[in-house]
Image (cartoon, rainbow, N blue to C red; front, side):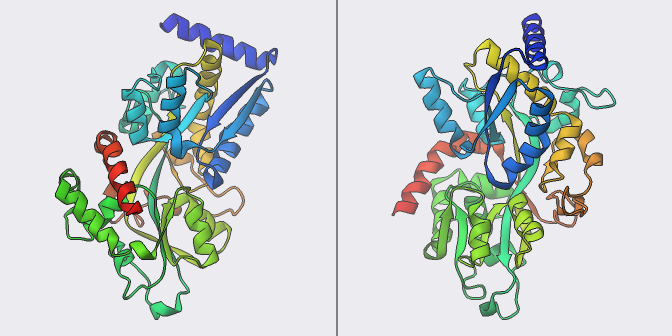
Length: 366
């Protein structure tokens, strides 16, 4: 198997550098500011160095599990590389829909020779998952809401406080994060959230708390929606990924601030779909070795405020590519931003996601 892997990698490298055979790679991600950061840090440099490769961007990551299940069932896998959150990677790996990766054979070591598996460390939460970033889901809020009488939210439970902070909210149209925040604001201790959520009573309790703001909530499915809703004034506070809010605040100069309280840390990274031809898999692995090296992950932080997943990348994080501002203070992991974080349980959600999705969507429709 090792010999075959090396042969495939060598063939892919020779094919790409010679330009003898063009190949299209369909890479699936999340769109918006995040896909742009990948395009600038990974895709463009790779295509410049490999003229035979054309990267096609697909923005379907939110539907990755369902679509890969359908492709596998049909025996027609049309995606080459897919960006997913850690809990989805665990599910896809468990179901045999993602390839297992030999990290130290397939990926570049750190500049000092540290093997990739050590450089990524504990962020490798599945044999099929190559981490790219540490990000958080958190809230942004308008800083010019007259009805708030000069107050600004500084606690996650202010999201549920319609009396002191009236106005429309936006929340993601899925149970993840919403259920945890609801229980925290219904008096459940951080360490007990998943134990409570594992019970029927706990699910009902979380949904009952969300019910208190349901008629004031716009539900989003794409990370770009909350920034647009905030910019347009259609909502006064809303959840999304911290990098999307960074773009809104720093790049677009909108009257919006970050609410870091109870931000939920998560991991995002690559999976290689099972069922690729040898040629396509070899091309994907060549791309991955480039796109996940120390410098490339640090380069991504020039365009969006997500922490690189490799330890060796962190010291290389510098200034924003266009604004020239220091990016470190905008990372979710910065000590000033991480005073009260909630640690997302990837394995728990991998086990319970399908069941809770069904209950959450039924509640939304009710």
